Length: 78
Image (cartoon, rainbow, N blue to C red; front, side, top):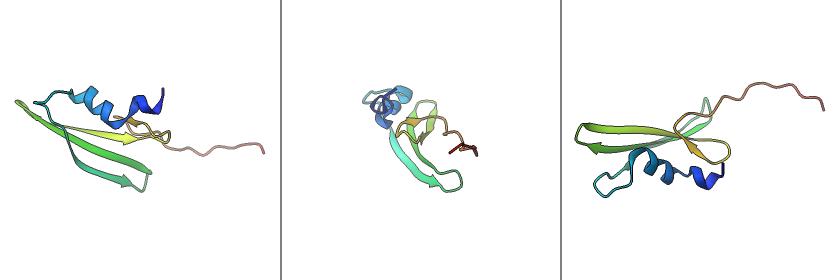
């Protein structure tokens, strides 16, 4: 899948919906040094409360709602 198809804006529209009455806003972002993750928290309010979703940036530049897999040690023949 192309990186442009997994942009943060498109994922927010997919998960929250794109409409004038459902405005989404970034409420937090950061970097987890221990696992080398970049993340963004997006929130929107509706009649039942506040919906908050975390998006994680993967090595290929795409954004997903699940964190990237941990790098595992690998042996290679040189």
